[in-house]
Amino acid sequence: YDLFIIVDVGNYSLKYSLFGSENHMSPDDHYRDLLRIISTCAGKARRINVIMPFLYEGLQIKKKSYLDESLDCAAVLKQLYSLGVSNLIIFDPHDPRIDNAVPLMGIEKPQSAYKIISTLLSKFGSIKVNPESTMVISPDETGVTKAVFYASMLNLPLGIFYRDRDYSNMTNGEAPIKSYRFIGNDINGMDALIIDDMINSGKTMMTTANFLKERGARDIYCLAPFGLFTDGYKIFDEAYESGLIKAVLCTNLIYRPQELLEKPWYVDVNMIPFVARIIDALNVDESIGNLINSTSRMTDFLNHVRLEEVIE
Image 1 (cartoon, rainbow, N blue to C red):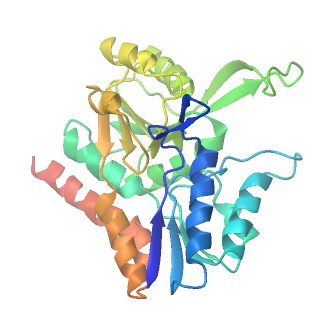
Image 2 (cartoon, rainbow, N blue to C red; image 1 turned 180 degrees about the vertical axis):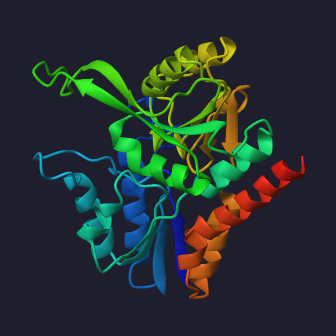
């Protein structure tokens, strides 16, 4: 039989007891469990397929200035391949070039952009998808590629924030930010869609939102496939209550605490039907190229939205 293993390496809600203390499962614990399952089934399953929406060790670590690939990530991919994994499904990876580490293993990288945009426009009818009303924003230089995709698909102007860092004063392995610089058109009176690949503490998004609001932005929406909220929800609560942001949209591809789901500013983007469709296609040997390519579906959806705007 085909075996499909779904693992959320960031699900810290699961606990275990060790030396009389209760511990939360870490990404390392989840990954080791995945390896145990694969090893148990190796040589027995027809194919082993791993669905890991948030890629373990997927964030890049710069070894040299000219090498921007995570060595940890490459080691993980090679280990999965050596254990017999046929297909690996990951969503919105930080750097899509990671599959160079295992060119013979099937790695699919579907994007959640279509579902995020369709959920956003379905829930907030005030957003107008035209260059005069809405702008796509990249909060930093590392997220430009994703923001360009959104801007191109939506046919909207793009604004980019550049972080001017002080590399002569490294603190905890990171260069502090001296200032933010904005490259883009006037945002006054326009809605803003801040696009990022994940929300960690949220400080970068809130800094960006404050800058945009000071320059007259109307409603600000924060969009990201993965919402980690590593420092809690306080800054988002305050931003929503003060009118700084309108909403935050993230997918249900990773664990979300009930507290987050009850926040008035949070919108959960449902990806379950899409994941189920991918599993079904792989199981019957159907090509999933058109399925994971959201371009045509987003184009059809946007044409329908614009038609409704014209009618109104």
